[in-house]
Amino acid sequence: MKKQIQIAIDGPAAAGKSTVAKIIAEKLSYIYIDTGAMYRALTYKALQTDTNLEDAEKLLELLRKSVIDLRPGKAGQLVFINDQDVTNEIRTNEVTNVVSFVAKHAPVRQEMVKRQQLFAEKGGVVMDGRDIGTHVLPDAEVKIFLKASVEERAKRRHLENISKGFSSDIEKLKEEIILRDKMDSEREAAPLKKAEDAVELDTTSLSIMDVVDKIISIVKEREQAW
Ligand code: CDP
Ligand code: CDP
Image 1 (cartoon, protein in one colour):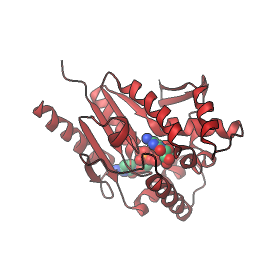
Image 2 (cartoon, rainbow, N blue to C red):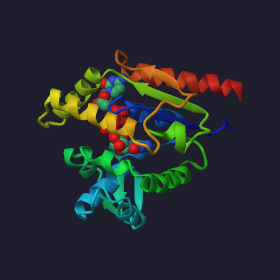
Image 3 (cartoon, rainbow, N blue to C red):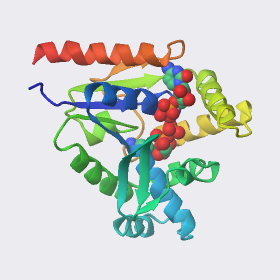
């Protein structure tokens, strides 16, 4: 039997992490873990319960009371918090615009990392986020850092919004992406950063399948070495 490895995919907002991670997991019959969805689920719960987003201890208390589950659904992964399906709720602007405030707290991150490491324990996992190669899975056999110009990333999100029938302003999206990347890269606790041993891929002019093929070939290359 082939070795079941860990694949870590990091990068800034809208670089294509979750789209390619899902396809790679499917191709390899691995599980996919969207760590951003976990921070989003906690943020949703914090907003619902009027928890102060600057209060790390209160957020940690809330997280400890919250079971966050990622379950396979017909149209992709479903996200549950204490058995409530919050798959759509966690993608609203209300959540997106404040999730980085929740994710900056070290105690919250420590608890999240513990849970993410448990999910990945048996290998055979593709995990995406901001600190996967640097903190969550430092020994991952394959580490990828995806990036793309901010213009391209705003355009991708804009097209996504339009295709879903949502109103969308590309300049506003660009500003929001720049702000979130800044917060994620400048925070003290496990900032967004390329792991030293990660392969960096600039996806600005690459299609989704170009990126998938490149990562699969890196996986194959590494497999030869084991
Ligand atoms: O998909 P998108 O790039 O919009 O974001 P996401 O992956 O859903 O992550 C949402 C937010 O969660 C990020 O902007 C980070 O603030 C936080 N996050 C994190 O700090 N660490 C991770 N491993 C994953 C997400
Ligand atoms: O997970 P992350 O925030 O990094 O990005 P995503 O949600 O996977 O991708 C953002 C959007 O860009 C999606 O609508 C993808 O279909 C699209 N995309 C693309 O057009 N070309 C790529 N090479 C990768 C993603």
